[in-house]
Amino acid sequence: MTSSAASLRVASLASVGGETALENFCAAVRPRALRLALLETAGNAVAADLVQDALTRLVAHYRDRPAEQWPPLFYGILRHRIVDWHRKRRVEKIVDFFFTDGDDDNDGRVAWSSLVDPGDGPEQRVASMQQAARVAGALQRLSARQRQVFVLREVEELSIADTAQAMNISEGSVKTHHLRALSRLRDWLEGESR
Image (cartoon, rainbow, N blue to C red; front, side, top):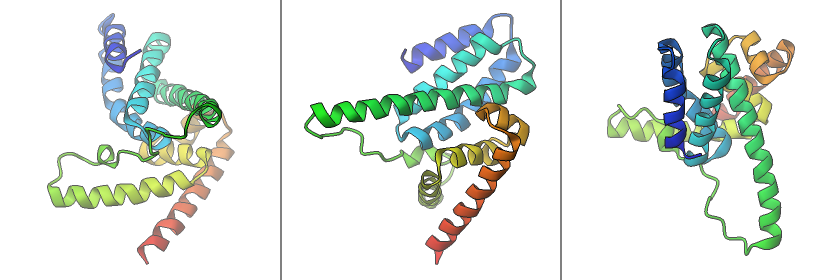
């Protein structure tokens, strides 16, 4: 499903019954979720599709849930979609290794410009892009679990309980992965600034 078709589907599903709270949630979470998906997939089109699919599934299956349940449900769905994408990508890489000449259209780089606030002036945008590239590079060095916990806790500001629910892990694991991620990011980013 193309992202525009999925957008229409989410809009039509969300508008049934005038569910403006769900529409507002979807509109607010989309740009932040796209940043998370960009870090995980290193590709704009794939990231947008995964976010749109997660929103579609949230609206289709969980619209009747209380609004406070939407963030962990949505990020749980998105996490599963990203894991599925990684699994599929691993299979594609194996097939590519054996059956193609090795040329790859995707060089594995994240579009850093999409992580920057477009309202900044040119100098601020360049500095922001450089900082975003450093942070995103450090985030990509983390394990997948540490990266996901960090983004859900720090960027999305989910509680420990909501993060645990979204990732289907214990609250103790959330605390451990979060602490390790913070420690490693601090060490790596401080090391780069010296």
